Image (tube, rainbow, N blue to C red):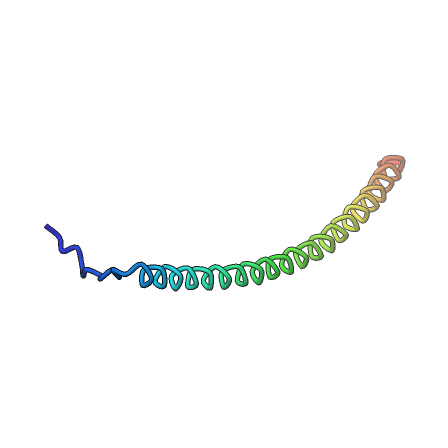
Length: 91
């Protein structure tokens, strides 16, 4: 049978148990407050990262739109050149 570990003495007096419970509650509240602060910090960092990503995607979108316009213009020039070439006499 595995060893259950050391036995922790539980206070017998009601006041002692209450003090122990309150200390445990204080410790838990302090941990929770720290976790909330860390959560707020991480949410702020995430918000900043998302804003940066949004800016970069906006820039990328603008570049793609400009590239699409340039490609459409180049396509129109190529089609015009193709039509002009088809009208040239062969031979």
